[in-house]
Length: 317
Image 1: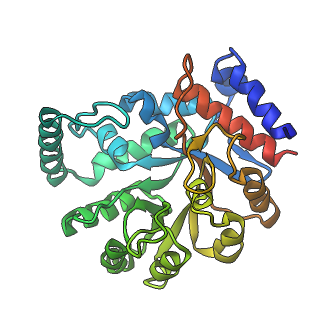
Image 2: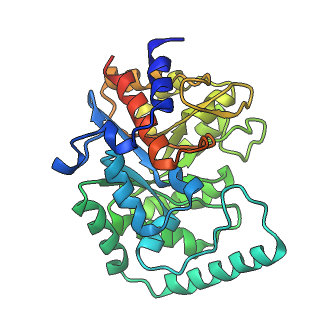
Image 3: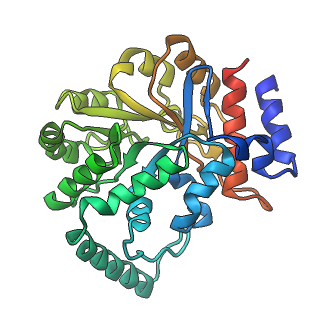
């Protein structure tokens, strides 16, 4: 076991709360830039705990994160949107539960029609007041997304003053989004997964080339765990395409479409990627995406804190 893995294992068995890893939290704004590399998290990382909107910023401060990629649902709920029922992480919905979700989505659409810039300016102010940079808006776009919602995503991003929109989506949707990204002059970045044999899935090297050719305002939200699981090399991809990358998602997975693992137990070159960012002084953030199952007795705050400590060790050794 290498020293970085040993360090993570010690953290995984510690009984101290995550805040104890960063004892000066109350004395200053959070700072999670290490050796020039900005580490953040996507608020999706809290989904296993089903966080309330007013818990997100205090938890980010507790962990010590100074940069965030905000899920659109979290951002809209912080702006006062009616909730869409959440029945838990990865749960198969019953017909009644699905009906409740559909009704929640209808109410959300009605709410969106009444929003003003002030709705999201308030959200931006909340992050600014906490000393956290709202860097990326994650707005996932399924194959049936309506044009009005695509435009809503860009209007939301403009008000939040983010550097880019990240999106789990498809090549076909990227073709529709490209002219909207050109209109708003905001980069929309496709988030990769592992179905490299599906030409419409944003996963293979060819699919990256396709969407990046559509517009200078189309980029890549590179998930290094998914790329590893797809048996591709994230280090080589970053070296070649760094100018088009808006942000990374950090996770540890096994190759051959293997599972998400506690960091240090998979095959994703997290350390090599982070040290490449340090060496080349790339400025895009590397965001923790907590997807491995939370161990019994722990919670998302503690596990994100451990991932942050792992990343810091990678950068300071």
